[in-house]
Image: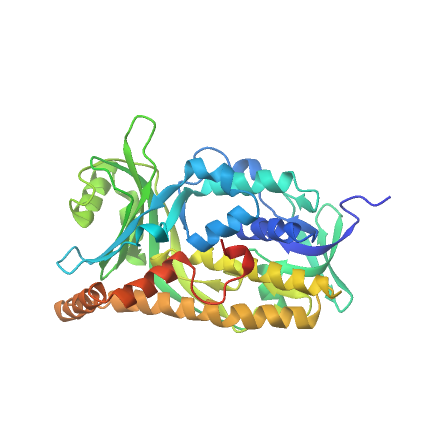
Length: 408
């Protein structure tokens, strides 16, 4: 009798983070089985205080969550983004993106811990998902007949399609020899939770400085009514060590200086974490019985908050092409199935990556003249409803050829 360990499943998903687990659940909705292999301990990933980061989930990604059955459990933890305010160093010429009432929000903010819990709990109850956690892969095997991963404990998990969902440093991608374009922005993002005296009114602030963007993202108030936001502050690599070592009081003073009065007075700051910022994009996203999703395929600047949402578009597209292939009797690793995924996602993810990179560079040009040109451009967009609608559709993730799972 076969056990989950010995069974050959449709998908062998390497990486059980937010994107990998979302794919396993999306595939399961279409009747496709998977092995999910991850080296992390889920108990550590969901522990209180492990990760202060929060993520903006676009409208399209929220539709995916609803369609894979995790939205209801997440709803109580959502903080709507009703509007986005964009400024160049808090100077006049602010740009506001606020959808019409019937269009809904621009997205929702969630603590990463809550996203993980929702996905992990749903996966644990799904019989089509076999989850091997705290597992180390010692060998990856791909042939025209199937794929397998040999684990350090001696287990060999087999599948029909290998999916690399291991993030930016994907060993599967490296081992397969994918050509990759990448550069280092020589910046770090500093992440921290803030409490502040004024309510945020569900407005996300993106304040651009030559050293990089300074973003304030709305979070739900604490039970006692304390107002909270999540800070993502981009600093140059050379300044990062100094900024992270600042005393709490000095750090709060620097934050206050950059954010002005938009949230009133900063009253406390949570633990700080930082990570390097870089760009990478693979020339292709498939190979023999192999597909890349999420950051394994494309890593972008967090300037527009689209990193995870881009990965969830990969999830929806791959699940759809696999399901359509299965309906006409095609194997998940069939070259035609993978070619359709490649064609669908390759261009879209490249264009988003290019746009965020261009935005990063545009707002990074120092000097008064550059600032004036940017503010002129922003005020032109502010006066052009069609352009504003275009940018809002991009932010909500509802433009382009969307997979069915990302539609309402």
